[in-house]
Length: 406
Image (cartoon, rainbow, N blue to C red):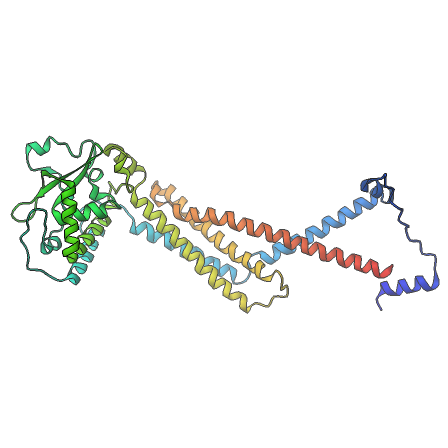
């Protein structure tokens, strides 16, 4: 028999004069506050508040203790930080700005890839072209693209001022990363160049010398007719179209991380050429690709760490069945958030020391902000539930013991 039950039994048998406070009936005119003011003095209230505060602090500290990084968690944190820092280094290396036509760099590697892809398409004996028709053999052997031509074929063409106020990349539709998939590919198939001239699309033939070099901008041709010729090739000669698409994609890839860069998709359709060039100085397609790739890789690493660390829960002995999984998940979230914060901070330090803003891990920072917001909500909600559950258990046990006495 417990002490409480023994005391209750003795009180009932012996009626030893134990005085119990008799609760007064609440007068309908009294409020709840007035009622408690009658039966409780200031000392009782202060004692109850101090006891509650102590219990609350105890449970809250217990939550912090169970969710702090411990044991193998520090190893996971080290690995996560290392992977995130490697990600930043690799992304910066792959997206470093290189001068156009630099030997032994990214451009040569991409052209080597292009040659391998062309080899898989086979060869063709057809070499002579006709109007708005470039044979397959010419497509795969000529290294450049027709819309890279800048020199006019005659004084009459020079007067057109196709690239007025801007670099040719910001005037030619073939250099747009999305629109170029249509117009750039069509230009390659037809030896033409399509420009946005004062918000009007114009197409010119491109004329090469006898060695198929030194392209120059020639007479105007209907843009609709040029596109029609490209569509006919798609219907009848899909291999040439495939070669042209490969050449288009490789060309954009070689230009995307050069000093001039590649404009944001579609901007040349509603901005002047000069404004497109200025905008590209601040934000280019290369920047979007870099941020997207960085964010995607950061999220992938976070998922990998979360999955591997989560598997470790299977081998842990947890007594608290209700909260053990969520408490462990909180430690996982802390590992990921800390690693993202450390990696992003290192990129800020690197950018500050080298005075190169391109080294900032913008993609990783975006993922960090998202995690901070979502994880803070999860942890705050879990702490609230855990503390309230703990407090409920304490006072349910306390009043259970009192009920045994009375």
